[in-house]
Image (tube, rainbow, N blue to C red; front, side):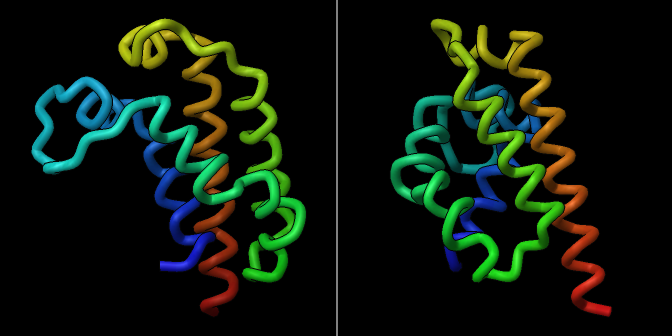
Length: 119
């Protein structure tokens, strides 16, 4: 799995509150996986070098300009977000829900552009 595919996987988790409840709070977790807000942010920004990816690598990995724009908006929202104390509080935070919505927007544009490339 290349870096853009790993980032796509992280964005998918960011976009899905139900998945966050499963992975972060272990509610009805039938995935065999665990995660947390902190783990997600560390993986995205530290392990995957999200900032560097957006500046230098995204275009090289054939992400469209519109996908990169939406990712930059999401990145800025994540950087501005002041995390609550617990994962449950984060999931319930209206400001977090805006980030979840933006992650959904990223996935829509990313999918649409993938479909355009496949045609």
